[in-house]
Image (tube, rainbow, N blue to C red):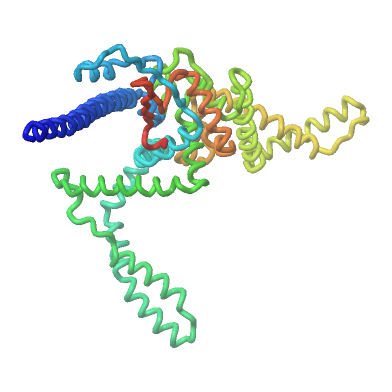
Amino acid sequence: MKANKRGTTTLFLAIILSALILVETTYIAYVADLDRRLTYTRALKEQTEIYLSSYDRQLFRTYGIYAFDSSSLDSTVFNSILEANGYDRGDVLYVSGMYSIDTEVIRRSVALYYSYRASGIVFQRFSRVIMPLLIQLDEYGVLDKLNDFLSSPAAGTISRILDGGEQIVGVISSVCDTLGIDTSSFIDLFSGLGAIRNNSVDIGNGFDPSDLRFILDLIDFNQGLNETVAQFNSNPVSMHICLADYAGNNFDTVMNDDVSINGTSFDSFHEDNRSDTEYILTGLEGLAGCALTDFYIFGVLFLRSLIVNLTDPGKADMIMALSDVLCAVISVLTEGIVTLPPEVYRVIITLLISEIDAMTDLISVLRGERITFIDTGSADVLSMGYRDFLSVFMFLVPDDLILTRIQNVLDTDFPSYITAIDVKTDYANTTLSYEGCYEIYR
């Protein structure tokens, strides 16, 4: 009886322990497989992150695009992680999908580009317009004369006039009330003069370089401007403005020594001088695009010259005299057979002179000079160069054409660059994969 009990207990324990051993070994195998799978997944992720972190810095600084060269892909990090965890390095890492720079990537990059560079671009454009004007004003002595006036007794006299504005209002009001005259317009005028004096801007003690609050205010202003532009870019019209400005100022032209918005020379991307901006504008490559661009510029310059010739009294008198002489000469030479009125010759001469002036101005623009459109006599208020003309014309090109042509230009300079990648490896008769992409392009 005792032997039977011992045998039953032994059999029971053998069954239980064998089951426990089976469960334990299965659990150990599962944990080992899970650990190996997690290691492979982590290796895929780390290798993909390395790909994304190796984006071209110069491409980003110039065009604001995150992308990396697919021709330099390797599996160094993937193999190192497997080796560090004691796994076989014979596993193969392969790429199953690569996503190149497309129009949507460019659109989002342009929005991001102007969201954090808007303040710098605005100051750059403002300085490009205002500095030549200030230089010309200084050459004519306007700034010195203004400084002399502010330091003269006349400035104090004007200040006292503004101070007495409110008293003048009372005197005029009482006199006009006696005469029955409406004085509302005069009162508004002198009240405004008094308000100018009494509500002047408080500038404190002036600018102090040692006061760090000025730097903080400047940083806040810059950040506020960038945030405003970021919200501004969400509108299709504002996005078109940014895209047109981006296309007109950030790509190579036929002009020598051309640079991008941030000052990068295009020699960094291609050796020859290319007409990329002209292609984006016209859709034509090479000489055809340059010729059509020059024709656009010539049209604007011809219209400018025509307006000047029609509105300038001196030129109008000269054209009238030439038309009278030409009418008389042709009448004599044809013995009166051709008798056109002087107005016809006036139109012909005006068009011919305008065409010659426009061609001369076009040659100057192609040489890198600027053409004045508004001249006050003492300073050039508005002048345009070759790049300015292209930027203005770019506003007339639809967004989809601009984006497609920019993509073609970038594909030429960066043929193997990608913005997202999908990497895979085989493990235990299954395929493990990991897709990496920059956050702004998701």
